[in-house]
Amino acid sequence: MPRTPSDAATPRRRTTIYDIARTAGVSAAAVSLALNQPGRLNADSERRILAVADELGYRANPFARAVATGTTQLIGLLVHDSANPVFAGAVRGVTDAAARVGYTVVVSDTHDLATPVTTILERLLPLVDGAVSCSARVTPEALATVAGTPIVLVNREVAGRDSVVPDVGTATRAAIELLVGRGHRDLGFIAGPQDSWLSRHRLALLEREVAASAARLQVVASVEPTIDGGREALAQLEGRCTAVLTFNDLIAFGVLLQARDRGLRVPEDLSVVGFDDTFAAMLVTPALTTISTELEPASRLATVRLLAALGHPNSDPDARIEGRLTVRDSVGAGPHR
Image (cartoon, rainbow, N blue to C red; front, side, top):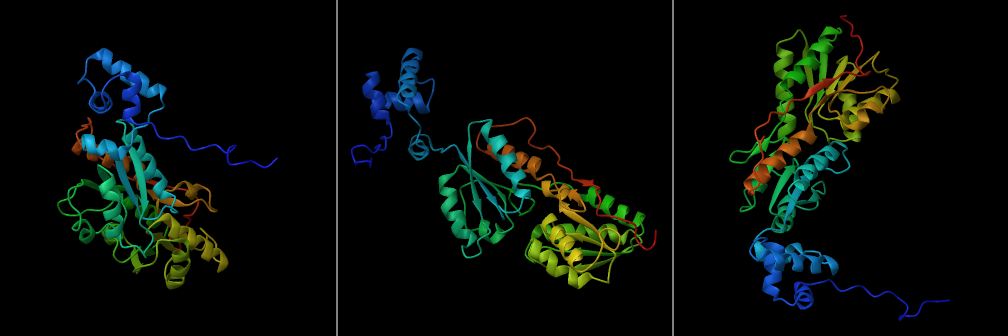
């Protein structure tokens, strides 16, 4: 039998502090104090108001709370590309740290190049108490256009801004030692976007370690940090090196796919090393040797520092995060073994 308008469920009106006040027999101001500034009322009144609020199913409106208390209890998280599995660790790290002090996380993906990052910041920052940025698009120029909201950066350094950059120097050295030790002398590096601070940082680490070894390094200067970017870049290195390192795991996955399509065997004909150690690195064939950049603990630490700036100090805001090399099946013997 068809439903009539009277049969349809009507949306339930949101419970307000005025509803609580009427039911509890107190003023709206007393309700506001009980909900937003615990301890300001006598204990019996506060318990009664909170019990009524729970009975009526009251849920705080973060924007109304912001007017009353100056805080929304929201933290922003900016990621470069939510399709990249590496950012799953960032989301986990930030939400874990935020939940411990009652904060909720709002995630914003900056990958859409049609929307200026300054516009994204202008829309997000008024809604949150602070933000953690794991996005390469949040440049010094973009940061210069916003003020008043604390932002902690991950995997990027900007003068005057707090940042957490995991130390992958030892892991990078281990990767070069692994390749040289297995007989590779001609190495390639597929860099990320030209304007990426992180790509330049990783290239500098590689150049330093290669200079101290018996190897040589060919560089593909800039590609999109995607599987397609890796596919396209391999053509520039094919025949010029026996081992390829990549800016991130997605590029490495593209190299593995393109190598297969070109009839190159990995690791017999070409060895491949990625950066990030995403969960997919162990699922591809062959399983990918990669440098873990510890984005989850780095993002957790960045959130701890942000929360400290918001008045929630933690015991370990200066902890050190170090990357590590995870050796799997994509590295084999080179011609100089």
